[in-house]
Structures are given as structure tokens and as C-alpha cells.
Length: 466
Image 1 (spheres, helix red, strand yellow):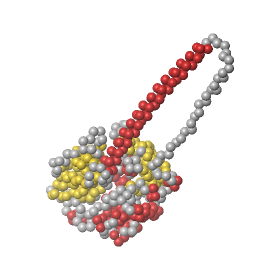
Image 2: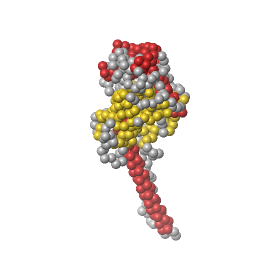
Image 3: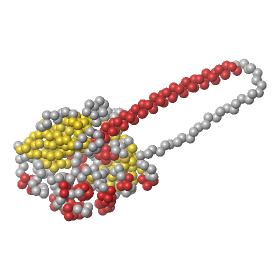
């Protein structure tokens, strides 16, 4: 068994906060293909982040090869993500300053899973298998969307991971390219033998899997895709049989019987009893109505939080745009925030950015300051906005996960809302951006002795969350 998730839950906020994923259990065998579909905001991407050891669950456990990943140290976790899990994200996220073959080889070089020559041999082989043999030296800007997707698949497989997680890998492709990519993944799975977990909104792609599931308000439900003949999201009503109350036969109009002692007393007692039952039933109905109203309020509150979380986490995309070497250990950082939904404006308040350099197993904070005096104001984001900072990275004895490069983390906390003057519709978003940064006092010739780059060694190399 490659992957086993047991009663995994992810909650945002306090004990009664919003549960993005609720009590999910899932197992994936070697060579198995599982698909997960669901509405936007149903928890698909959050579940994938939990299964990929990118996000720690509020409760429950995630086991890779029968090992609890969250019982490991941060260094061990980084190695697990690098060597045992392949990630294909919603966007290719290729490094623009590296060629296709360099992009594919980078995870092997950073993870130190193989020597440089073997890493590039593996990269060239994978590019040939995904149909990019003649595009190995092309840069991402000169590649089509489908070609970039193919390169991203090759990059995810360079370390031969037993598990491949794909989050909407064809979301920005046309129908023909979608079909080509899913066929390619199936062919690679047969030859590489990895377990594949695909998150998609496309039911036709989901049908390719051996098992299919649907995310419904954070819960994972088995799905029988071949039997679907109506739209996926329509809930079928459950009809309960009506109950008939038997009525006593009407009394005949015969002669009145004798007026027995106590006859009127029992008649009054029955009337009183029926009256009491009616009052008690009314109380129960009122109590039931209040309970349903409270349940409705809770559901509406949960739906608002889910919509707010979806806007803050999915509609707002952040990434390191660039890092420039200003000399003498000073650098300029540019972080871009993009409203990828484009439907409604998103307001960002009070971003708080901090920078850290890894020294041993400790993250040492370094000085960082915004270059824009209005960085603390409320910002309306409709397209893309760039925040700029200047930081100083003059650290001795830094950890070299990549030879001669510093391992740097930028931590950003911000408040996100759909309104410029929010009341209770505010979501606190936290982001971590990881990069490898070339120290100012290390010559390019020294870096090039250990690493192969197409041209001058880059000042920085972005990394996925880890």
C-alpha cells in the first residue's frame, strides 16, 4: 500500500470553525488510479495538500509506505516530498530562466537522488517519452500550454516517485489537449508503476480511473460514474411512506345506554389527556423548528466561510515574481498577487512579510522592509499587483540543500475580504514561499562546478511548498 489516510480532518479557525475536509479515509495501492471530482470549494485541493504532506491535518493520520509523515522532522518531510511524491499542480510553474531539460532535472539535483549526469540522462529520457525530445533545450516562454504540461509531468516523475498527485492538471487546456494529457499519464503509469490520484472537474477524465470519488462539503463519497445519467450535483429526494392513522368507527345512533357512574369523569379525563398531548406536541414542533432554524443558520454560516476560504485560497494566487541582487548581501524581493477568478474584486489588508534563512534545522530571521510606504493599506486586486521588499541575507554557516545556495523562506500573513470595509467576512491567509538564493560572495564559477545551468547561474530558484 502506497498511501493510507485515516479519518483525516482539516479545520480552519477555532474548535467550531469551518471544516474544509471532514473525516476522510482513503487507501491507494501501487499502480492504482483514483479520481476525485467535486464542486469548487468542496475541499478537493485541500485534501490533495493533506495527502501530499503539504498541509498538516487538524486530526487523523497520513501514511506513506506505512510511515506517518507528520511524525517526521521538517528535514525528513522535505525528503519525503522530494523523493516519494510527484506533484502536478494547476499551473505548470516551470522556471522561466531554465530550459525544459533543466526544469525536469532540477528536482533530482536538489533532492540529491542521483548524480548530475544520471539526472540529465533521466530528464532527456522522460522528455522523449512525453513527446518533447526535440524541445529539451526550449525555454518555457517558447513552449505551448500543452508542451509545458508535458514538461511538468516529466519533472514530477524524474525521481521515480511511487505516488503522483495531480491537481486539475488540464484546467487551462482545450478538450483535445486534455485527452492527450490523461492518455499520457495512463501510459506512463503502466510503465513507471506509480499510484495516481487525480483531482478534476471533468467527469470524462474522471471516468478513466479505476475508482472515483466525489467531495461533498468536505466529505469523500464513493462515486459510480458509469451510472450517472443526470447532472452530478442534483440531490435525489428521499420519499418516506405516508402513515395512515386508523380512526375508530363512528358510534351508531341507537338508544342511549344507561348513565353509568363515572362516565362523564372518564370523558373529561380523555379530553384533558388529548389537550395535554396537543400542548406537548406543539412544544415539540416549536423545539424542532428552532433546531432546524439553528441548523440552517449553521449551514449558511459554513457556506459563507467556505465561499470566503475559496476566494482567499483559490481565487487569489501569490508567487515570488523576482529576486534581484542589489550587492553586498542586499536583495530586492517582488511578490505578485493575482485575482485569477477575475469575477469580483478581492481586498487585501495588512500584509506582513518576514524572511528567514535556514541554518542547520533552525530558520534564522533576516531584516526585511517594504519599499512601498502604502504596503499596509487596503488594496483592491482585480488583476495583478506586486509588493516589493528589500532584505539583507548575510548569514554564515547556512544550510546548503543545494550546493552553494541558501535555503530561504518568505512567510506572508494577510487579511483577505470581498469588501473594502469588512465586518465579519475576513479570512486570514498565510503563505510560505521557498527559494534557493545565491549568496552575494560566491562566484558564478564556483557554483557552476557543482551545478549545470543553461548560462549564468540564477540568483534564485523557486521551490514548491514544503
